[in-house]
Image (tube, rainbow, N blue to C red; front, side, top):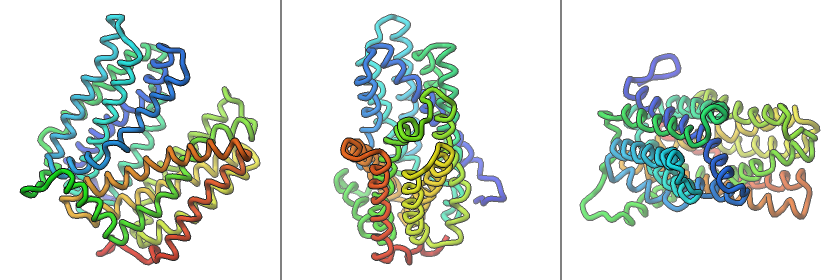
Length: 405
């Protein structure tokens, strides 16, 4: 057991370091893979296809991955996914060295690594309750969120430096090595899983996980109302650069744009620190309900921001609120779901989050052809207002994890 003033257990430290290594490798490939695809094809369309292939696996395999994370040994899933991912990634620089690399190879590797990542994520979500006591879930998840966000900020920058020094294909050797070391750190850890009642089918396991999400009032409310967060988040993500460049006059190649986008990541990192404090003081349902209203105010104000500095502050505020709401939901699910459902329950909610973002981005892309950017962001912000109204009218704000954490 640990809290904000004591050290985490050695097992949790190993688990966290393993996840950090995997995230670091993935963050460098966020730069390397698009550059590699564009270099091979010169096509913006092919690069966009890469982004879609990286996001699609969660929608396609999230429910199955959740069931696997509960039915099979989670340590074995994480180790196998890491080693298989390393082999796939290493095949790209090998093919480049042999002058046989084709864009189809890169896209296939990106898709396969994405699928492996879905199964690894589901197993990792289910593992945390085996490493810390349930009363310490908020601290553990907050720590992982903070470090993961910082890695997400630093990783692409490091990847850009490496790209200029050794080339896009060779950067993937570093990601492959990170996957191998991350897998090695997990050897010997007992991360749970193997909850497989006799005669239970895979489809039955999936239904059981979905049934818990829909049956447990707090989890159901946080999951369904949380759709507004992902929809609005997708709209903001899709239009933040357009708002900055076309509306606020930020130069596309100037430092202001990078600072503006980095402000959002800073807000997410701050949420990782503040979320445990918020969760100790207020009910989970109240945190979410207030968060939806605060998120609506931040996004609506972003749409009306007079300059890039104000926009940066509002993006930081939006990411602070959104990440706090997301961590609040994760912790509530981990606290309420029994051990045998941890992976399924969390993978189901993750699917909704990943599904809402591209939908929100597509809606924003359609709206911006009819009204201007500011009006479009105002319109997508109403998804958060709808979530807030649903939360307050359904009584979600009165619900708490029992016993309270």
